Image 1 (tube, rainbow, N blue to C red):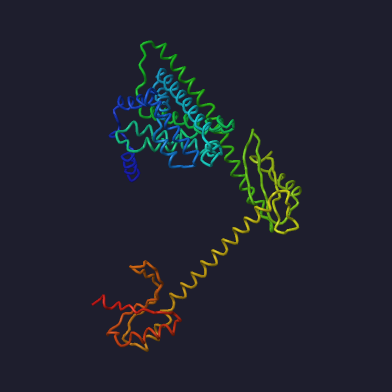
Image 2 (cartoon, rainbow, N blue to C red):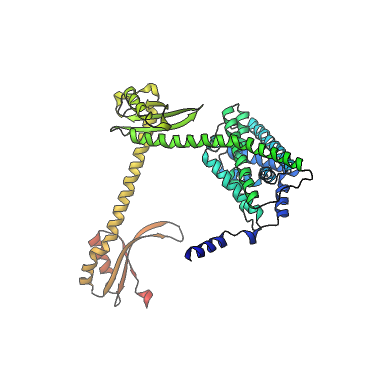
Length: 452
């Protein structure tokens, strides 16, 4: 009974039937975004320049703005709709428009970076050259959110959000940067990310079209329908096979990096030597681990021999090329100027000294504050004996600003509650508190007045 009730509640939560858009209108909204003519091309080129400026200046806000402007999502969703409804002409038109959009984007970005005075690769540029499994998942779930929004009446801000999350435009700008600076690794890495995003957005759209049961294209000739189906299936397989292969490779690389980092943490716990930097990556189908050590010098050859044997014990780490570099030593006689680490050591030590001085200063402030806060607790029993009519007392430090000169002074304040007026005792109480606590210029604040 409880299980049936729970099922009914879940069914109500996930029931999309009342919210679904008319299929014709949903398809038309997709078809409107597929076309790349006139204003769409100009908007795309301007958006590319905006995104390139954002990448050039390392500004995430500008990049996000460019992604909101860009009309790149339309042809990709059109491919997913075409495959899902066996609309081969739509697939061809969407693919052609997507290719044209990608070409215009790369050419515009290349032109920008050719004339740009800044040729250095910033972090936002470099981030678009190394796709991971997370990019695949972002594209897939982003595309899924997009097709749900298109199929439903309540669209909200989903489509702009998908455009930002899947980040289609920045990889094309980075590909243009690679061409402009003749760095083909940037070009292929970035274009590979764009391809991954496009394929998995189209895949999630295809699945959504099938789940929402969009009607397939009707063919007068059954033989033509079969032929189109074969072409569609062939296109799906040809499109998905590389992406699945690349996904498997990215998964393996992700697992390798995680296991490599764990291996480094477990096996480089040396008493007087620390890991200064570490890197685990796959390049040209080969696995690499690079570790730089600082501190007391170690026998690198012996350490490498021992750890290589440990690497071979785990399948995913087997055959990894391990490189161990000895950085700078903590003693002057062990320092190696030839490695160019002396300046870095001095910089790091200076930064540590600055941080330590800052920590010590903050600790002194905290101790002083704690001591100050405990003063009222310490003198309360004496106040009760000397001035029985005082019921509560608190000591505080406040900032007072002169309204004419705007000068700020620090004053010590005693907040006092009492049962009878303090007129005759104010100066005596001030002198007592100053003598007892060592505080100067005590100001009495009568808090009982506010309660009358």
